[in-house]
Image (cartoon, helix red, strand yellow):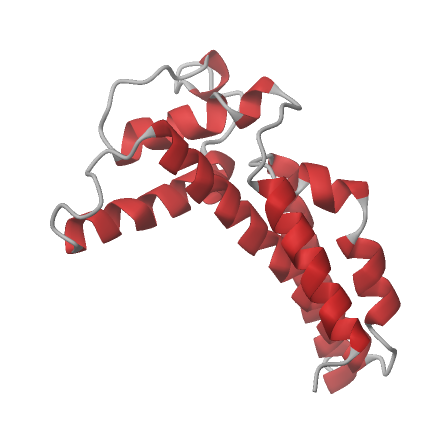
Length: 172
């Protein structure tokens, strides 16, 4: 039998999923820079590369767009090649949108997992921290989009988890 906390967290996950796949607009980068750069390289299609990503200017790295959008698009391309035409070679824009947002949702679960594990390592009840993270505006709005801050937060949470694990094992 499921307890109330599990049911409540499942409802919060559903809410997060519905927000992540809903149309919305915070910043142009979420629709133009990340998808355009990644889709151009992965599907070998003509796309516009903003000046800050061009090698002669190099103000920003393409690593973040490839982590947030490129990896999911590459997986979609690989699946398209393996299914021999069941999935289109170059997906429609809506398919790219949903695969990108689905990946953002999956990335957000990494933050949940690391918080849960850190609480368990410290002998604390993870319910309140998970509740606070799952209902925060940052998680529900910003982490559901392909921004560099999302990747930075995931790296921070994983780093803290590794640090607390090493502390518990007496490495430090």
